[in-house]
Image (cartoon, rainbow, N blue to C red; front, side, top):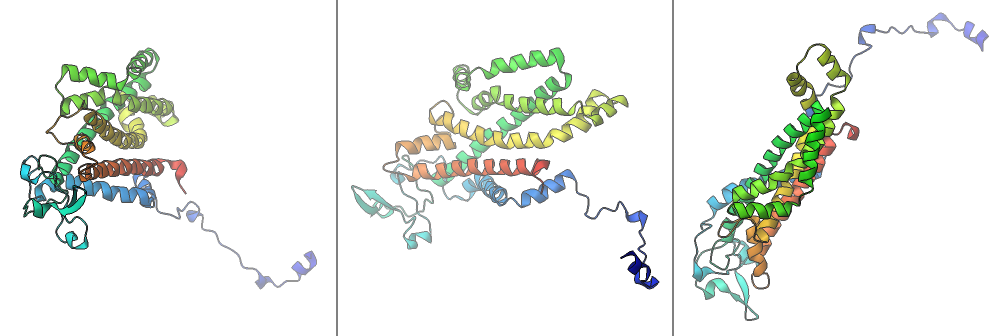
Length: 339
């Protein structure tokens, strides 16, 4: 074989020239952490659908009461317990205002001589359910976002201080957390109701008294993980202050975890508010929230199921959408999930 190689003509080979300046050329465009996360979350169809659902519900929570021809608080006793009736759909045999009376299906709008439409029907006092459902959704979302914001601020500050300074400070702060964690949330809520009138403020305070504990524990664990990393030690060696280390090095690395936990806090707060209002410890009638509307509908489920149906659907969609979006963000922010 070596003899055959020697007999080959010189022009059988071509010298390959390697340009050393292109040795470390990046073949793909450089992406930041947020750009990479956005590209990954776009591939998660469930998360994208959840974003559109949440966007629609949030918009309708503010626009819905405005586009309705009826006020959420106006009582018209003669229009009480009317089923849903929607223009256009009534010709298809759905949402046509037909209800059951005495075991027979009758057009309750004609029987009561009602010449207007109630898109979600009315309750036992003749109030428009369309306006009340979206007004209640608005209040429930306000409570949930406020509770999540307060939980995030307190949890990040408490967990960050505990994890960053460590030692005796960490021991004392964690013992306080363990004491608060051992107190049942429902007991705290009952005590809050005894000292405060049931309302928005009482519910938000009751949710946030212990709601920040989970966030603080997650943040503390992340701070303990990053504070001894090489880039933090190098910054400290160069004379950076504690504030600069936290704001420039540690906080940017844990912001993804904070966002994910906040996204899971929101549906928990929505459900907790609905639960408290359902058992009578939350908002009180005539104030509308998803919990109070479900409580009203539960009493009429055999005769007027639409009073329970619509707020239950909105509550279910909010819970599912926030959880699916939280799962999508968790996968997008996790570098180990990268293809």
